[in-house]
Length: 463
Ligand code: LLP
Image (tube, rainbow, N blue to C red; front, side):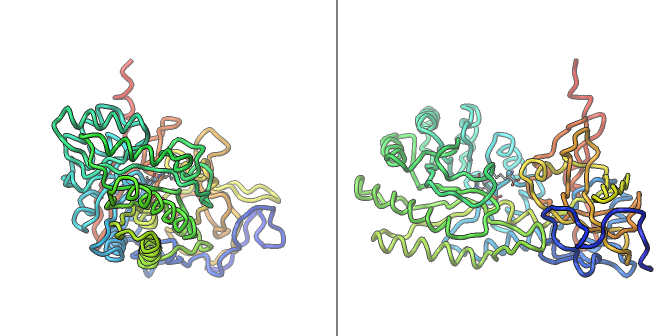
């Protein structure tokens, strides 16, 4: 294909408007393995394939927009985390990133545990047969009904988030004649270098019990006195999309400090510490995430060193990665609708989805990349903003990116690294119907979460 001219829109770095786009890749047809699932590539005709299936075929069969999830990649990443942490540690996949019954079964088969944070996630986990003892139940405002369900089911741990909850869970467990294993979630006062909305270890926010002022120590003191609770450890989650391990280092130091205080005061060495999730992934080629084995090594070294210093037995470590497992496994496939060049600015590319299937760009100013998926092109790169079809100017999927200048309505484009927090945060805004999740593997595709239909929409509208 020859390099074709495009009617309007800047194409060269020297005429670009201000923004934080990355420079166009040398080859817009290339798919950076950092941001795409392992099995994604192009076939002989230049069409993007995933799990051995062309996106043109997927679009034809399942429609667009659709989340295309690479099952082999998911399993590989889950296994890599499991293997990296070995038998002395536990990996709890954070279901909030994306949960479906198929995913629960894959996790079960790959030997991971599961973190759920609502009655709905707990119901999904139990209905897919995840053994209750491998489930951790989180949340800052679990209802009594949710707690009762979790205790009855026999979940492996409930992570207590407040003084009131300590009493509430103890009371419910006792009334059911049970002793519930619990961890106490503390805030260690670390400022994670991430977006304010996804940082969770500073003190002025809703999660956990502050270490400051002896509050966390008081929580342990109270919990240890209650017959309905078996206090197994301390939990800390510092935030999300973090690349720098120093926050974990400070968190581990402070958590171990609490374990030491508990030992000194009560003569009890708590057996577990959970350092939460939050490990970053590559959304664009500019991000450089760490591998699970590096993270496992770093965390285990930090905790061992801290415990040696405090003369404590090294507790069993657990972690809760969500994004780092599911994020890179999926991309969103869209069909291009309107292509609108704005003279001297950029070209707006409208797709058939938007903020209802990916709220992250609007909410966190998240960055994504995008590729033309139904063909290759040698046309000059043009600066684009990929936008949705919603009635809102902030309805942006990819803020600044380059696509070939001959992009046209009907082309398929794909946004990688949308496996985490896109389907799980999807909405029906403007009565959009939430897209399906299609799992691909070894040349076969199957729907694991179906597309919503008008019937689904109207069924809820009972007025
Ligand atoms: N553990 C706890 C206690 C958490 O609160 C979270 C995330 C995780 C583990 C998993 O974090 P991950 O490894 O997936 O980063 N909606 C935001 C992220 C919110 C995360 C909430 N908690 C986003 O789209 O970036």
